[in-house]
Length: 406
Image (cartoon, rainbow, N blue to C red; front, side, top):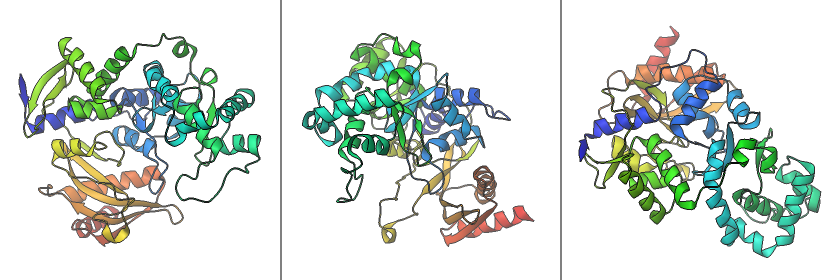
């Protein structure tokens, strides 16, 4: 059994995620394809205080790019990406669709709880919603609601998702694979359509794998994206069950695709993908969103980087430790700081309410972070950067940004 130091393990993980790939001067769809071959999926989230979640992992690996690339990949032929519950709600490569069929089938078999209960409570409505989309083409939930009910079912009685019955039916059909997403409108609402009008024909004609084969493929892809991982890490990547993950890992170990290893400081057994690179150094400099695969599994981030990270969006403001929307700053092969960021589009300013250094952050952290913030602001079309008073790194960062303007 091979052993890895924690430093080796984090470099393996970052290399697997694409942080050793040479930059393209002008990122293209080919660059995007390369990133997706590393990350596997792009988690979608509607929070837009800085930039929506799905755009940020691409920026972290490609640098400033035209966000139109993602829209083209997800909405234009030949379609590269499609939305599904692959991690959370996520863009995934279209060739993963057949490997999600077992998950889609479960929606019909286990249609209880949450939006899926609608299939048992209102099967007539589910049929009507599907028929409406088949007849009219790509539609938002509001449009379909208006088609079928005139919007009368939509209420404001409860906080949260505030879903109408039509929206619940749509989410069931989406989970079941009877509907998919043709695109998003200007309000970031899904436009639902039937798979045969969205997915490439070769994907629709691909034979459906057995659940065992699908589980094996999902764990294989998770292992490629992680480089080195525990069983728990592999299971989380595509949100799989314990027994299914364990069986798939055993199969891949037997086949020689996963190599059992020990990692310094890790209590659980780990597995190294046989094609994973073990680089001597990683020279990254970028910001990671809270939904980046490098940090989305918080226990893994702590094991790899000794970096305890929590998103505090839902924490009451007086109880927040670092801020509302805090991004780790990756320098070299580890996070060395974290910054609370907000895009003030009305004034064209990138706001930095707080900046905090990590223990043993190098002396050049403020200068490197200032360079990265200028790059980020340029990508977002923001002409100024304003640093607040919170955090031990804020004074040095203010000085570094001022020096860069001189």
